[in-house]
Image (cartoon, rainbow, N blue to C red; front, side, top):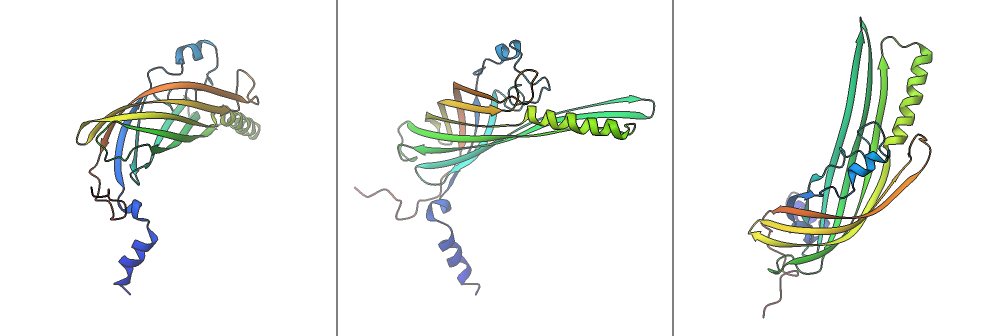
Length: 232
């Protein structure tokens, strides 16, 4: 049975996955959302860690993934923002916590083969989820205060949660054998359940943004025979 294991794995995994070329990069969005105006208009959550407060979605965001074929690439990123405050009065403490975790992923489709020495243009689409958390605890709460704290935490989770996506196009050029510089333009969409003082209102945000990219690519494994470039 043991000699059959490599053969079974080769059949279970498609050939492009075996020739995947990993990469990691940084995406820089210089105030693309007009964060200062957003805050001045009073559209932030007031909790600092919300999807539009600027921390869970920083201007400089790392990501990592792989080109699974010469034309298809996948990468993911993770945003995290957390705020905890604890106050003491004698032996009694009160602790409040708010947080958001934002997993995001993009799918790229290159218009040229990735081993082509020319600048490489590509189209992409992506999605993200803002998973909220909120709680208030104390060793001095009565049952009524605990119930009120749970209700307030539930409203805060509504204020912090959301989903979104983006579509766009980009291009990158090779600076060094393993380093590429690029840029992209995207139309982004964000949907939350909060606006102003009413935590039950739905807000949708649609805007264009530009980004600069700096990527490091690991050497690609040799392509399988059916993907190799035809001999001239």
